[in-house]
Length: 103
Image 1 (cartoon, one colour):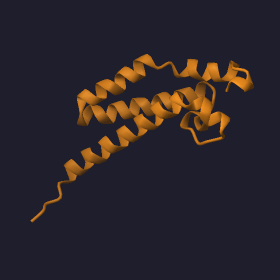
Image 2: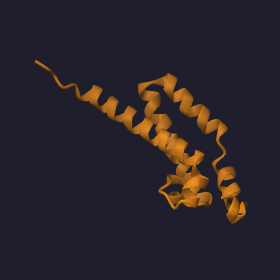
Image 3: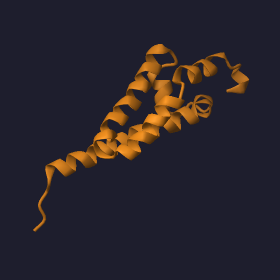
Image 4: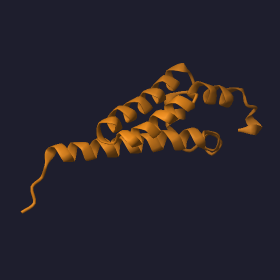
């Protein structure tokens, strides 16, 4: 008979939540200009193109890292690398200063 292990289920949910948040943010940071141009949903745009929005997106990556660290430290390392090498505020600033025809 199959026994449902609540601890394993919690880890699976944490891993799924972590990965979905990470890939959503990574994708949205990559295609933010296209999403803005095409009026498509984007977590960064929804968070706001300001310091508060950048902080919210950073917090999403931080939470993703914290969850993954408990489940898979190797994958958490990749999330940490993204956190360390991605300047969210700079990406936002580039969107704000780019002429509309370049977005």
